[in-house]
Length: 458
Ligand code: ADP
Image (cartoon, rainbow, N blue to C red):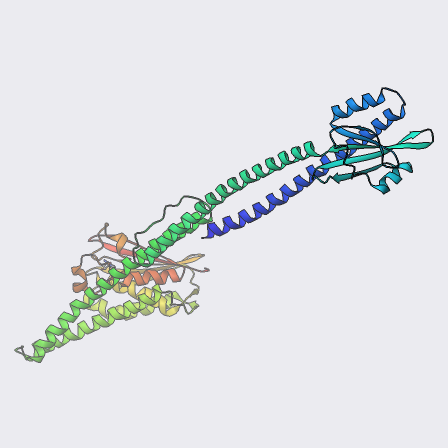
């Protein structure tokens, strides 16, 4: 449609210009021919007048043959409209071209000239001049030159103009058709593709044929389809993961609640144990829902940092204190060391606490014996926090995935250690929000090292 509209406009402009050009050229040619012929007729009249005035006896004969040769008619007319001499094809009897006022003008010594149409519709250039004998005007000489041949030439010119005009219109039509097609075809393809994408066929892709705006648009549509596909896939995976994560604790809840309700236990201690399991599983669900909510907010970009100046050493100290009891229970050794001149870092204190706590919890959770070391090192432009443990470690092949949502090394780990698989992806997002970097290295069976860098100025 857009191609058609554009084509129509181009055609209209083209036709208008062509018409204008045609009219101008036609006018130019006609004007030129008329002027030329008028001049020629006048020149002939002067020539014949000179011959007539020479008084030569052979002059009339010469004039006759000259007139025949030049294809004109000559009339030598006296004041009383009597023809003294006549030669040429024009009917001798028709003298309607002789007007009284013209004759008077000629007899007064003037030349006349005009375009004349005879009763039969033929057109002539007429030139009249006085033939003088001494001082007096003896008679009037009229030369009539038919416009026939001129009109023939003009009509040839007109047909050539018309033909070339028609040719140009045909070419213009072809060009318009071509433009309309090349312009609207990719647009139509894009329309079909976007409709398909909107209908859920996200595998739809457009072939990019040009590097212009239309090509860019096709590229943008393709990118959109890829993004939508990724979004759909991850959403499906996300939902599947959530239901999977919830199913296990809910099964436990149902099972143990039923055991307690139906009194299927023997001792009070047994009952307490079951209730404790129910409590733990409820906590697990709470934890999972909190994490999910947090992650969803972050993914939507709804989390904004409450920026302040944070003393990271305090944050680390506090986290260490909070973990002390668990560490003691597990018989682990937890140490913290600070290096370099400390300064305040721009960031959200609560979020920074969350980052440190999460990494520390992981280190303690996945370490059964040995130690967890924390080192905070301040340099000129950044503060590097390293949390190193002597725990079970992460297999090399799985290391690149631990930041993904719900990713867990060996699916059995979570039940044994009680994680949700969301912790590290939340930590990673929070570090990113702070403009920092997170890197994890690990060796299976030897331990894991997490390094977070916060920058002094972002
Ligand atoms: P979870 O809540 O299950 O711990 P995370 O996202 O925090 O989930 O971690 C993803 C996975 O990475 C965990 O399942 C765990 O197997 C592994 N992992 C994380 N931290 C450590 C660590 N310090 N030592 C060994 N494995 C770890």
